[in-house]
Length: 59
Image 1 (cartoon, one colour):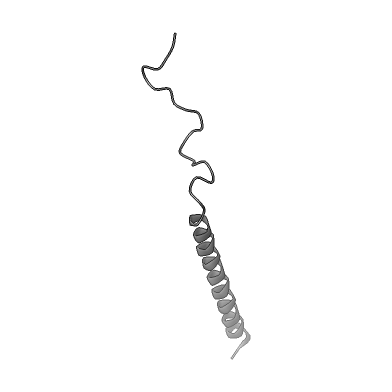
Image 2 (cartoon, one colour):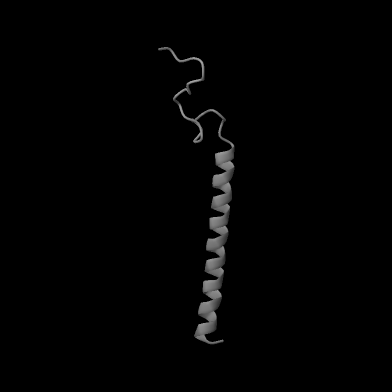
């Protein structure tokens, strides 16, 4: 075994653990986001200003 082989082995293990931790953190973040109560925060697609319906305008 030379030093290059040992370094590659250690780095491979460290990178594998880092990737696994990142994937697990991402999955946890998505799970927490989907568990939020609907209506707790305004949805991004809707405006808080009510729309003006046709026929309701006053002059």
